[in-house]
Image (cartoon, rainbow, N blue to C red; front, top):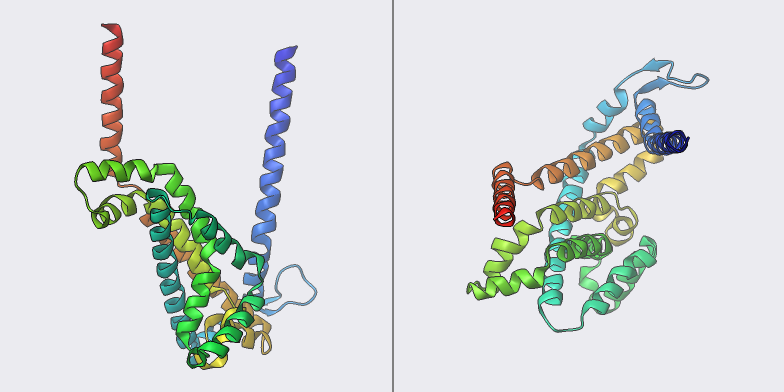
Length: 292
């Protein structure tokens, strides 16, 4: 009787998990599917699916001379901002983990500020501050790159902080020092390869945050250095089908970038096999020791 009751409970939990998973998938992908269908629809009024299909929206988008320029600027902005964020956070966390300073509280406070402040407020603050003290930077791409790097800081910081905690950086650094490794050798030869997965995830999040941001780009540079989200906003006022097509293009690019980052973060198969062999050898030696 107890066995049957336990089986029924597990079955109910199984179906409940499937229900939650299905709801999550529908909630996530239904808007994407609707956007894709609308971008391919020639006419869609009273039916569930489009009445006729066309790729004219994508053709018009790719024919627009502004498309290539804005896409190139957004890719350059996103990649450069991601590199800056990851580099700065790695160095800061390294100093925090191997030093005796108390910058941890300051880093956590700085990481919370961009999340607590909306993008519009952050952009207005940046424009007001630099307009007062360094007006030559107003409207310049360098100011937008710095603002995007600051805005994506929380995602990079918390991701890499968890990766630092997982590998026990202080112990690794002390072991490297006993082998007479310099800090630069430790950073490039030990730390960065050990953080490969965390760096890939943090970089992908930073890229997606900068690539899709509209408020900072619109208020800091505007049409003077037009980015992809700014052009997308213009299309929103012109044609809904072309807007949907541009949205799908942005989603595909973000997906491809994150997929490449995930692929590069995978461990080397040869190294993994060697690690598995070492673990099995140690387990076998321990077993022989116990038997003896």
